[in-house]
Length: 245
Image 1 (tube, rainbow, N blue to C red):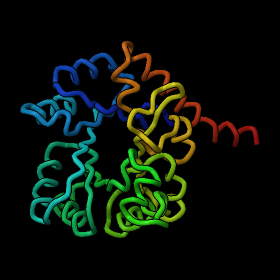
Image 2: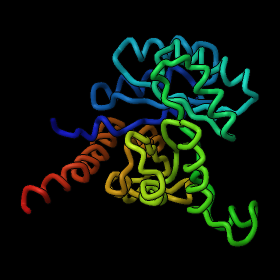
Image 3: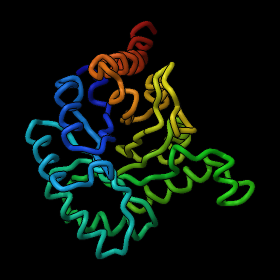
Image 4: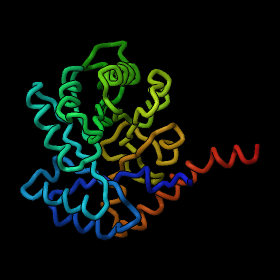
């Protein structure tokens, strides 16, 4: 079965109103099947909107980057699992991850994804916050290793660290989702560690998350299709190389 780019793209609905989010989903139609929702849409009606999208066959990534005491994390994860959401981000320590997994009560979803280092941080930020000698890559590796050991299903990292994580966390099925992805010619905005869609896929990302380069375009569907085309080329390349060889 062909590996389709559509199955690896998550569009971030980083808009302030549900009506805007609904319009974006309608415009993108069948070209996109996975959406990220987060604090931008933390308003009355969000649960109804999520249920509506799931009812239409869409997949949902809830990006709240949650961190709290164990009881709160268990309760939050339990509620999310009832909605049919597929991905949930958490931050924090082993206990945070463990509590979130416990809250699922054995449910296979949502997958618990741990945020490593936000993509608006660079080496200077990390050294200022953690001291000289600490690199972004090492901090990401440390957190990914901790996440895997604690039973998380995957991590969020920039495309720059995907290959390093694959080396230190060879666990089958361990997911790597990459924000900080920008097509050639797009503004980096507040992202500091970026790569193109093709580069992220080639590095080994399972999913890429893109918001502004799609949702701020006048023709959102065409923007999504250009990104999907680039992703598909990257997905097809290994197969074509094997065929030639």
